[in-house]
Image 1 (tube, one colour):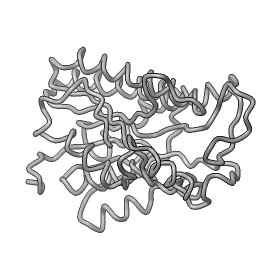
Image 2: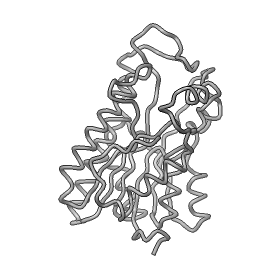
Image 3: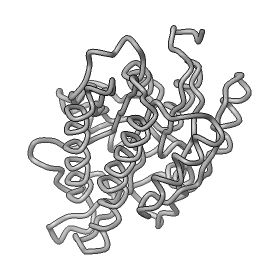
Image 4: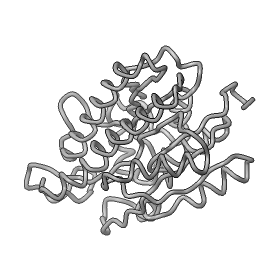
Length: 271
């Protein structure tokens, strides 16, 4: 039996090449899960407000994450996958079933993050470059952060019901708030859509033993946190912590455990 008493499971984690996704893959593997580490290398333009190390991590593969899991005795498979393509969801579940087994846990972590705005500003208060809302920015953001999670949830549910399974976990990552996400408007709107899909899944799929929740992390240092960000957090009493990816991953791993059976249809806000 795995360390925390979790029965052996199979998980798909998207955006598992760096940050919260990579930490989640490692945390689930440490609890006995086999993990399909889905990723897509994103090569961002140079931006004076975003450290190079963050851009490098976004452009990386998942081989290091998989190697770390295997070195600790776990099972993991990397999968380069463009989530903006509608066929990707089916392909990822096919690969997971072929290499690791039927999927019990889905973590929709990947993001097509960009900073777009309705105002004519060229950068935000943190010095990061902004762009206007365009059809292209909308497609990028909604393809990865809204459409892909919806299709991944649908694929998960269809296969779960077809095999008569009675245990499942769906966990998504969100950001923004009740008044949107000024300065990152498409990102905030796409995450709101993902929240809605996930809450609907929690209600519709509860009779099949599936829970579905969203995690809203605090500012999390995945490599993008600069001195300007640290100053912003220090000056805002509502921003209590700058978290590490591993801290957020521990919450996600708990939601994926047997102990979290009564936690569903919630947005878990971390501070």
